[in-house]
Length: 377
Image 1 (tube, one colour):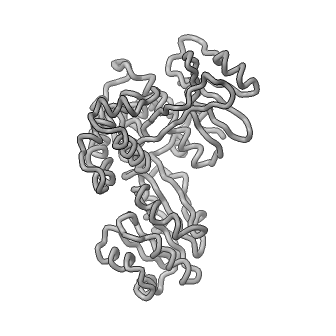
Image 2 (tube, rainbow, N blue to C red):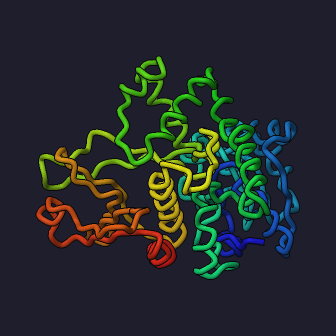
Image 3 (cartoon, rainbow, N blue to C red):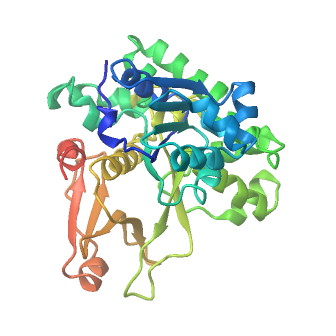
């Protein structure tokens, strides 16, 4: 068993507040919940948002029905809660009307569940986001040498729990392909405004080849054959369902800094590779640098969320071509990180970066020192 960062879960629970656990499908939200319930002394009720009867009771917003539903329990846990219409109001009734009750709701569909619980549960919830397994979490089982030994597997197959636990490369490829095909787009394709799975897959495949590059929405629209508004809507949904994440441009001082475009990365390397059906070893690929950059970006997101590290993240680039892969603005300071797979030649900070931000830090993150970057705060 890989111990997740949020274990023990009871440390995040509070009476008369809802603990909301978001995350992509198949990252272990249900397992995290079940592990907690297996040893809690509280009398609990575990239900699923896929249960039609539960949907009927909790979506009705009927005080008596909801109070009867919770009667006699110290804890109510609802897995896949995004399947219940108006779930936010039902959860609000629980925590407002039942003294001392504890409530957990998990959901894989951020754009749905977040929209439903946001306003009704203002001041009444705590939110956790669970990602694929992080390098931080793996330190409970592996030392640094062992993590480095498996680095290529993380870059090629990603970090979903089932993938990490699989014993062979073939099994890893089959599992992540199944996750991508069967689960990845399930929430999005069920959304009423997304009618074409082909358009969505074409968009994802284009993004898969454009990691580390600035993305032009107009070019994406032309290549796929849809309008820009459709591209914008699809990108928004892909972000909210934990498939991709957006990195904007940083600018404070220089006119030549680019801020109008964004970069997109995948929440898991394995998902990216499954979308383009590419699981070759690194020495047989020409995209090892892209995989490295995507890996470092998502692992840093996990680290910032879990520790937590408060701040904002950007990329930095000038029209003259000077760039830094990742810029973090935190604690009133700037930290620049260049993410380089190759260690063949030394990398120095761009001249315009030094000139525009003389007090900023600059670090090159490569396979020799990446664990210092991802395992410390």
